[in-house]
Length: 551
Image 1 (cartoon, rainbow, N blue to C red):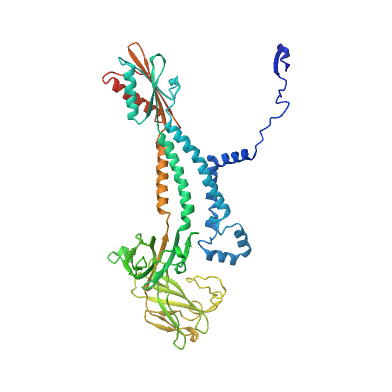
Image 2: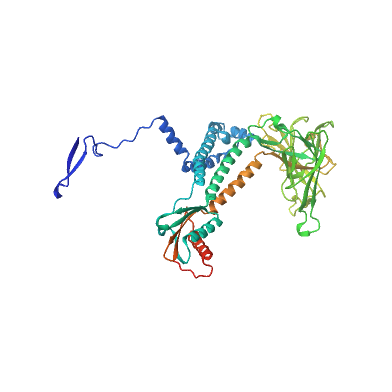
């Protein structure tokens, strides 16, 4: 059953027949189809696997990594986290609730990471499938009107049959690495459909696969790597265990048993300085650490050297030389002559001539806790104002000065303290500074009295120390390979043009008309020159001595 309506009564009656059950848009609003659970799941998956979502997640991942550089992380700086809680307990609890002290292992960072990984997989799988299908398929057939293409050329060649013209054109295309299909058309016409540049999409896929491989490498391989630092004085030995490091940062899968067993002894540290050039006097020529290694599956010790930018490989770990300085051997005795402290104390260099600063803490054995801030001068000199400084980095006239403090060293509070800093807030200065008593001065082998009859302090000798960085990173090779693959893929996607070329040969009375058409995927400023070059090469093969007539 139908119904009839009038439309345009002023200009006549137009009868419109519509089904009786027709509902006009003005009579009922458009309704979207209802989605079930499967429909919503498909919609969510399409949104997640879109390129826009992948780019957004990549941006979010970069933003989410920022707090990791603003707040101390438990995995890298546990002492910094403890100090943060000590300074601001309420604020630290809020930050900890948001997992800002464990950014890279937090729930929200891991969620962004996993979503980015899934988004990349969802983007790549259909693209790889489509790319493989496109590679196996033939080039598209020749369009009817090649003149509409952005790159077009037409020319007429006399005394050349269609068969020969198309054969020569095919040879030229194949020599240029085109995939070519010959198409027989009506009225004796023959055309060639050619395509090249699939390496462009291949490179694009390689780049994204390499990016995904890099994410996997960082996510999984990062859990097996560790890096630690250790300061060794000449004669000291380091055993590769978690507790032996001065600072240690390890992945979540690293355990004490997974650390390769070996020991490293610093036998000697040698520094050579420039002495034959006044303008460069005192500049270092070389740093050489002579070491002994044991525990690499044998009981014997092997000798090796470590230099700057020349690390030593030990049991899969790389040992790097980072810094150096002097570590005076200081001995403190009580009034009765009993040794209460004797150790080498690394002094941190403050300038290029190794004017160095160090701290000595004597918590037990004397009537009061004693702390000393020391300045070491390898070659002491005095400025016009009377201040001391080092004029040369080697040991020519070494002097150690000590400012002495007594009181509470703060070691019983339970908070970690740096061995290179002395908290003097709960202490009284009794020698040096504003105490009214001159700072203690020591030369190698000398001894002097501590203030207030506390005992004596002696400078025995001055060995050197070296700081080492010991790292194990199984992700280096995979990261290098994925980085190279990403660069190769990016280069292919940027510099390989994707082109389609069609050539149609139409027979005339005693000649042949060749039409060329080119189409590029994306911007290709070399498309028209390439089509013209192709036409010139075909013409030269067909008529080596005949002038060209083109349109």
